[in-house]
Length: 311
Image 1 (cartoon, rainbow, N blue to C red):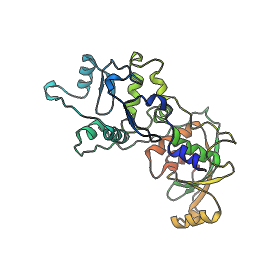
Image 2 (tube, one colour):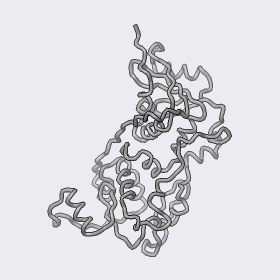
Image 3 (cartoon, helix red, strand yellow):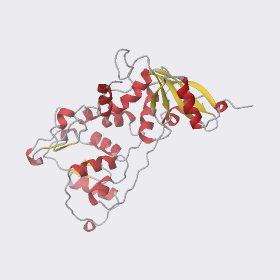
Image 4 (cartoon, helix red, strand yellow):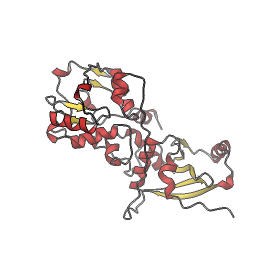
């Protein structure tokens, strides 16, 4: 992998980059973060600036109106309006970056960032794999996985370049497209609430031709890759570990050394071949965002035939 490919994966371009340059605060790793003018003097990018919006602590966004406010406060359990107080908050670059981080992990990102009370109500990510429908029988990639029979987990997978390409493509897929594809099956902090808010906002709130649904469009990570393009050499082979660390399979000695380091008895290991189709890719994509140690096991182990029991 050359330096250009590495840069594309580590610093992917935003598909809405040209539009986001108009934002007052533009958080973009590939360029300097720019602060432009006063918000009141600017055109908005996605929604009409003449509208007002209510943004709740869990990042649910609705159009502001007395009716909407009353309904939401009642749903949240508020009975006495006099117990609510007003406060002003200055939102700058630091707050925007903190809010982005907390949005992926917290139940109350606004309070965590704007009140700065030090409390952090962490939302542990949830995972439920998607059972493939009966008609989804065509596999894109066949993957050889090695499982530990005693621990009932995948230790590693031997992969051709196309599977490594598929995994690396996760780094270039924007969050809106991921949320749309997973359709609330996985929970990512309060990002799901933002996704749902855009779907439920009245279409008249959005600037034409920038429709809310465009935020969820993107390049599919499960499209089969042509042989002459990609990030890695076509004839390369890789080892993908359960935590999604990808290393070149240069020779058998490196694999043996790694297995020795794991201290797993050889008779506890068993090889299986699993088919990676469209539904399975969604499981893998979701697990990559919700698990830090057992991604392959969570996403693929249900495809493995029951390991053979020792006599």
